[in-house]
Image (cartoon, rainbow, N blue to C red):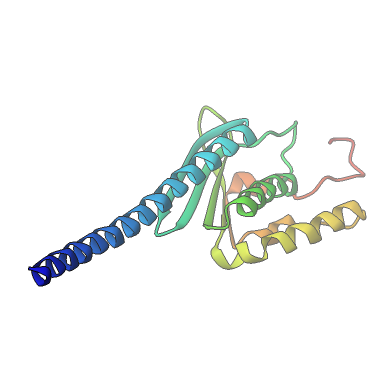
Length: 179
């Protein structure tokens, strides 16, 4: 009789242990999905507040890796300056990577205006460049603060320009009457 009870209790213990292990694994997976969703929501919120003229933001998650794709119209004065646009985009990417290191790709599409939505620049930051992003950005900020020439375009792994964006100034001309 005691052997039967011992055998039954052992069987029940094994079943309960197995159920507990399954619950722990599914809970861990569920927790990771919740963390991903929260990260995506926070990135979307930050992006919506960072870019005044945001067209689209697409944030995809795949196996604990997040990809951010954004299209926007830049805030410019009378003349667009590419270096300022590069700096603003680099700062946005740096802020996201600082808080969400699981982001492994950025794609920025710069639109010329709100109505035609003509794409003028496409900028990408791949995983290897993301690893160096903070260093490159800080080096360029040091150059900027020291009065040296900057090149925030080094932050990007690829830049695709159109004829329209090629006509824009790269940097501010200090000797010009125009801004």
